[in-house]
Length: 105
Image 1: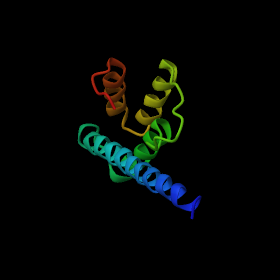
Image 2: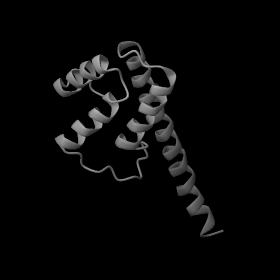
Image 3: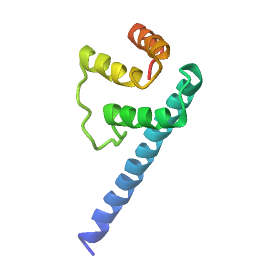
Image 4: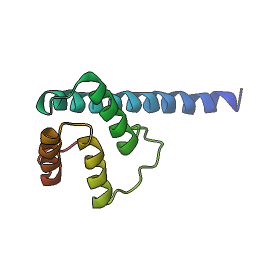
């Protein structure tokens, strides 16, 4: 009891924060990609693949995970990976928007 109750009092809020953050990150990525579906003419399969790329790159959102520092080249390669899933015209438009920083994600 002396050990279990304090651990439980710490573990429950930590789990709530963890799962809430995961949900918020997934919702944020989903909202962003849903917006891109219209702008960049994505079908459902492309959108799902892009969501996974986004979550892999930006992380799960857990406050208990360590986010690696990303260089400008890392971000550029990330944008290129997404743009390759689009038509050439939409991919070029996407790259232009991302590189100018007009569309933060």
